Image (cartoon, rainbow, N blue to C red):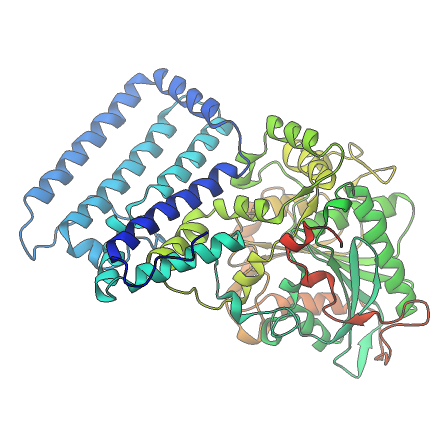
Length: 586
């Protein structure tokens, strides 16, 4: 592949090359992503509109009249005259913030015409006679195409890009093409300056050691930061879709370091980035060979009879299943449970449901019947598409059309560091959760030879949801909390799936909501809740202290004779990128 246009080449030739490569790259990324048969969705939409011909005609007529008015405004515009727009972007839409979009009549027309067309499509879908799920699919995929067609995404129709190209004599375009080629070689869109971070250099720095490992995971024990620690250890199960260091980014926003500063004994699972030969591993394998095993190791290393446990996102789903199995067997070693942005009840999962229908799951079950891996970048593209303007198109414009390097941001670096999953684990998970919601029915699912009843999970439980979470909608997290048979402390944090969790106490940002009781209606809970400024971390610390026993001198050794220190944290497993794992264990 060419590394970019030669120096001295006409800037407008560079311009054309850039436009074509952007289009090719994004088209490939979108159409290679898994999604239902779009033809069937839009055939249903057409049929639905035919059954609502009067409403359809009304929407059409209103749209044509507004477009005609917009055209007349353009023809009648006078130099220096500012007209009230007929349509404006939604709050938070950053695509048309540049003053050039309003000051130059032609681009103002492009902007408003595009927004009117997008509004027309949305109204047409809502006017159609479709069932709710088909309407949701039609709206979602229509928005994907509309987002892709925005005039802000193309060099010739973005006045900010044109202005910058003229000011730099084409250098911004040449730089953008280089950025595009570099990202094509990496296989993903750069959301941050990836040269600014490295695991073990300025991420995942909290001191500790790997004290156990097997083919699925490593167990890290962190060195205490206080002279005395709580008796009961705190064992963290992060999601296996991404890397664990979301909980240990930089010292100033490390959740792990905060817990250590509060006197907790912290253990954490670092999941393996799965190579092809481990694609046969199952949900049960992750429970038995990972969750159960690290519980045993943690208790032996600390000499305790009980421990506290935390699960984050899908790590929480896995942990809840494991605890239901243990409780059914009479095992009461887990004293308390913390769930962060976790779903156990999947009746309302948000827009991710448009990807996960019966046909898709059956196909993936056939694909992985004999093993195989789900590539981390496939999952990353799926989740990014839920917020395409923010997580795809913003970076297309910034990186490729404007030739800029994205800002250094640790959360987005972590977000790009995806991990591969065993295919058999993945299909079990999506069928029994997103597709059939089986965990919500006591005894319907069997894990490790035991029927799963989440009502048996009866230890004190702290549940955190995030109000703007697009992956685990907060109301679903609330309904999930009501499935466990425990005394639940439910906390709702501001912001989204990750920023709602990683909210350092020292920065005192955002806010959270709390109240007693767990009524059936989440809106009723919110109506009675009290909003408290600042991080929710101190609230967890206070709750956890009550579950953690007395204080004892901090241990000097992290390992013992049976489980010696294998290597310093962060360990080997977390450093393996998904494309390296796909090449096999080596």
